[in-house]
Length: 190
Image (cartoon, rainbow, N blue to C red; front, side, top):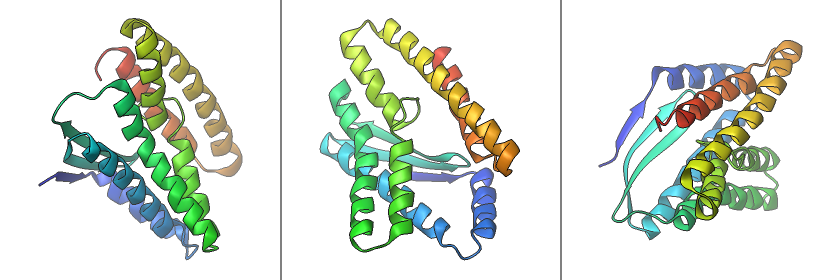
């Protein structure tokens, strides 16, 4: 049975989002889109013998821990990574066909954001896999760290402007979380 961990930060975020939602309906669609995203990863991982060991829900999202019967190739890992955004795309298209515009927008946004080439996002896994099959893994790591650092810097800048001008620090906090992941990866902790 997979172990599910829920951080206090996740519960606090959920409460804040519920309070801020004020009947708009963004929160339920967001939670559904996130669940669909993770199910996409689970289904794709099962194709290659993946077994979900655990799920952590934190203030910055969900993290699946999956064990495999055999190590995945970079291509297989990339397909598992792309399955989450792919599931968001399919749900978004279904929602559009049903004229559920808010559900479609939320699902497509979550899927697109996860395609950014920044670890630990899905796009980061895919780009690393592409680099690792063409370059020495040390060079692939260095290039990923440099690319991710630049992109996180842009996100942090845009997030800082949004925080100052609109009072919304969500993107800035997300950029800081991604920066911590880039720094951990660059130091060899991940």
